[in-house]
Image 1 (spheres, rainbow over the protein chains, first blue to last red):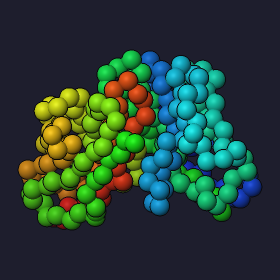
Image 2: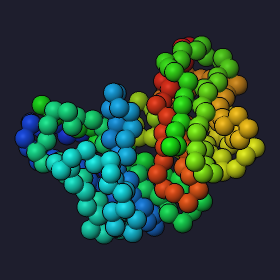
Image 3: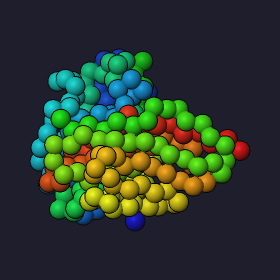
Length: 115
Length: 112
């Protein structure tokens, strides 16, 4: 079975550029989560969706960040404009919300470097 | 609020040593407990989980027992291998909720 798929795996961009990260959740899962991981702050939940609807975006750092889930098999996280402090590894995870417990399965991550 | 506290790392052991990584939690509701492992350059993988008090989760020789009386979920392995070198995260999720609460992670290095 395919796990959570993320692209690109690595992204290097310059400050001020737009960055789009992509995620394909596990087929049949109805919840999707975006996390950011840095050495200083550890793992942070940015936003999560249930049935393609954003439920909690309280972790989104500022208006430069936006996330969409146009259908059950695809989500994007966009940063516009990007800044050096956005450099981190961004993980997508998915789960089946009706399961008990609600176990999340993580993708391999996108390592973002903003110069 | 809900929180998870893990043993400070890094932890360095020799191959075949006994491993314990401590994890304690504070929860406002009734949590399920997890250990995730992150190998270098990879995403987090679920290692084991437990959903109720006295449950023991196990996988790949690792074990952890849900101890409600001590609010703990310590990770143990009897004989570690070099391939166990990774970062280990303890986490909880409150029943009925969806947000995972992670500990800060413990980096484990096993020397041959």
